[in-house]
Amino acid sequence: MDENKLYNALLKSQEEQRQLKLQRGEAKAEDNFRKERPYAGSDRDRPNWVQVETNDNEHPPTVYDSAVSLALIGNPRPWSREQLRERKIIFSGMADKEVMDAYRELRIQLRNRAGEGKSFTVMFSSLGNGPGGLLTAYNLAAAFALDSQTSALLVDCDPYSNELIGLVSSPMSSGVTDFVADRSIAIKSILYPSGVERLTVIPAGTQASSAVELFSAVRMRELMTELKARYPDRCIVLNTPPFRENTEARILERFADQIVFGVPFGEVTGEIIEDSVDALGSDKFSGLIFQE
Image (cartoon, rainbow, N blue to C red; front, side):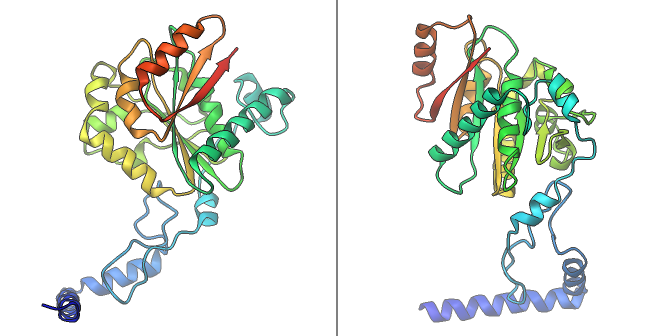
């Protein structure tokens, strides 16, 4: 069969499906749905798609509008400057200009490595001996969110720390591990406004004892794939447990485009850094963030 016959057969098949839908009244309902909800296909977490791609010739393919996407990101409980200062969260115009400039430089370097205009996922993992790296990951995500043309998503994958609770203005419950463990949980139910404009967070969840198995599961891959596909204007920061003490970071590495290690002051030697980079064994390694 030549290409023209294949094409005509495809058109005929599509028309037959269309007629079947009309007979059942489904096509009209679908058309009305699109008219009433121009950002069709979008739950609360998916406001940026004008329309999902379809085989129906009467409807155009997906069109993405970043301005609409950014405008619809909710922040019902914004932190005040004083509250941001108390929590050591960066913000534009903060007094400590050196810290602000350091995060801006990180943002520039990571974007340059990713390529102009590309969204990407950065994995952050501390080389320290205990918790304390989440604030750095949060501020890295906040640095991307400070750009008015970009949004950011912090995915916390450290179920052994509850530090995120004090950094987010909205109450949180289910998170990554809960979503992976329970297929009845929707993505929109684990997304929370952070209190920082254009920054959304996903907590680690409550299933700490089985985190290694959950992060290795197919549903975890599905989650990360979906998050990347839904938001082409969004930078994702993936926070993991400390690299040297846990296996989770090495499992989660596959979801990242770039990897950054945190170096707590006075805890890590040059030899430890070198050994950790060698153990990572990945060309995704982008650099170090020295934490005071």
